[in-house]
Length: 494
Image (cartoon, rainbow, N blue to C red; front, top):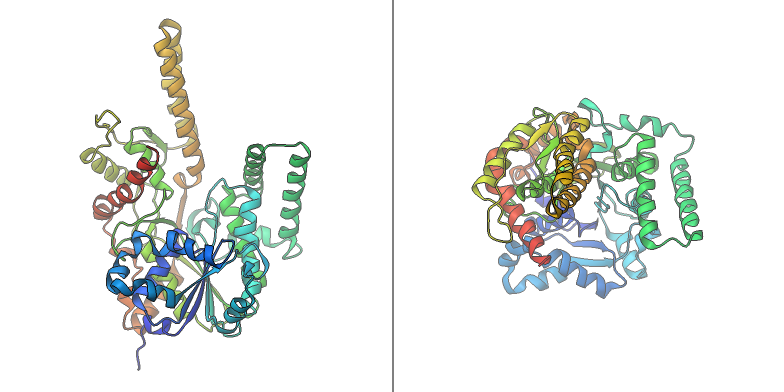
């Protein structure tokens, strides 16, 4: 039997990537360029007014980042010319027809030459404006599919979704679309599109008629997203709009070969291109930051529940492997990429790792004094959490009757802190109290196929069993989070 390599399958390929400025997108771009310099072209769809602006954005938000230092060191003085030869910045946006690509020559080139489309464009804010989230996460998928059908040499479409399209299910969650069955029973595949679009347009017209300010409109559209999400049974706007995007993939894919990657909570790089790289506050990192600074002392979780996290480079490796293995195979396949089944991490252990790290490396206040932390109080319900947050507040309120203005100020400041912490926890409630375990039969089969048929499968590792959670959190993730996010964020606020 003649063995192939995964990287060899990328040689001379033209790949269109949406969402390349996102966390997963830029790690994906770096990996492809590093392992296969003979890739033909990477076309990166970027929101920009023109090609020049797209090029500047590509440099500022992708290739100019520290993430690319290994690749930059490898190519030295030739790095910029290598990027210029291999990477094409496209001015466009998934919310428009033909992905907003207006340069006719570029559009024709892509339609005639592209082999693979990787759709990772998304707005990931849990409380995003409903109109914005729909345009990108839902209708953007339809625009991508319509464009994909015009690509004459297309072998594969990979769509990056989220494992939490399952909603707030408990127990073993399969790699299927069963959580969407009720919504899928609607009479037309375009029912949701027309209905939700009309609801959004009606609300915007109502607000405009009231001469509402931009801030009022934004808050109203956020509230609308939350309302529609809860109506359909999903915890937030992000997940609902990703669910509808997946539904369109099933309805409108035609004969395309489609792989849906559903990662769980994505964390810093495990190994590649170097360990610990992360960008922005990634879900649970907001909790780590709040805890480290002494602002967060309790959360609603079951200590023995599983925290499902997966390093971003493993997610990228699964994307590349899936697109190679499934190329030119008509149909749709779903992959859960997480750790809850094969290498579970409990909240109790997560709490211990945070405590150990933040005790050994305390956060320093503005006056240089260290913040002393205790282990997070883990409360098993939202009611218990809200009661826990209110007890000190009521004590301060009582003291307020007996003491002077000092306690009035303490009460006001603490009340502000309580509201901030409650908002953070409310935002992540569904994930803190999540009781599901993600089944990954398809993903395990993908690993098996890769290991048995591709000589470089180890270079595209996405097996979570290799992760030592204590070592990863103590020596990789939290130090990386501190270096690449917390310190930079603190400096930017000086």
